[in-house]
Picture 1 (spheres, rainbow, N blue to C red):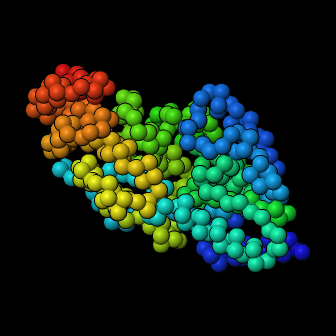
Picture 2 (picture 1 turned 120 degrees about the vertical axis):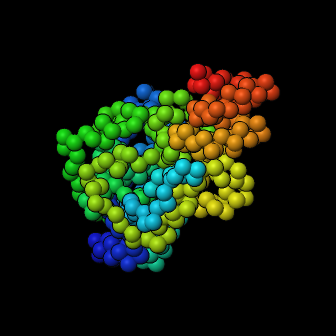
Picture 3 (picture 1 turned 90 degrees about the horizontal axis):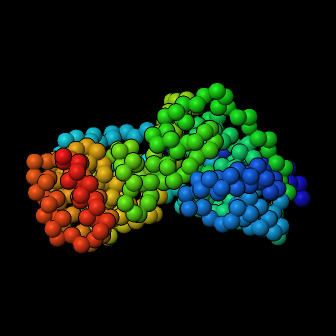
Length: 376
């Protein structure tokens, strides 16, 4: 079989099914990545969400024994929203990062990869493949970089020539010996804006991130958010776009090529107070098909409370007090207590003192005491 001809046909097919970029990489072990991951591990810079061992994450043949090549794909997503609702006094809003706009990108990319699989099934006898999107063992950006889709910038995102870093990535390991494409030259040069502008210093240096300090990671955690990050998170309730927004390679980049990835303004900039009272069913119906819902409602509600404190929204204190007195979850009660102190309405001290008298959870008591200390 002429695999070069098959490659050309597959590239044309990808264009037909609205895949913006496709590249081909060898299935060799990712030795440079392996060394980088070992360094990350030694510094304890991982997020804890990574799947598989370092060996599995860097050795394609451990995932598909007869692997000979990897197909890497990218689809572009929007960076700007039309008719974004304004956050105003008495009606404050939070913000989902762009990676959670529209339908969950994992599903969108899996559908694209499934089409590629069906294309190969029809043409290659005995074809084997294994697809992954973000949650698989392979490192999407390392695969895409090897396949020539772009280069991994200092902000640790894959940067493409046409779409900047506003792309979702997926890959398919195959037993087909596709000719690999040439990697793209690094284009960051002396620019260090993303490292300098990272709100928490999570970008230790160009290309190295301490994941646990990244605001995007912090918005996903389920416990109390450390105090130092509460000051930095602002009105973000899921993810952080700062290192992409400040990147010169993303200037003027805004593609609307997939209807299912378009943001619904009321969902991606939701009102904060209603979020605190939302039922599990309402949450699932409203946010269930967004990638930002995968950790459930608790982290988003905690982040919404922190956002109300950031705005010093006095009108929200009544709702926060109800949460502090009645919510069964310590993290939510305690964060609400801290927020009431941070906002500092004239009745905050009375509310916090009453809560302190009845509260039995030690961590919640600590948060309420923090709230009282903020009033002084």
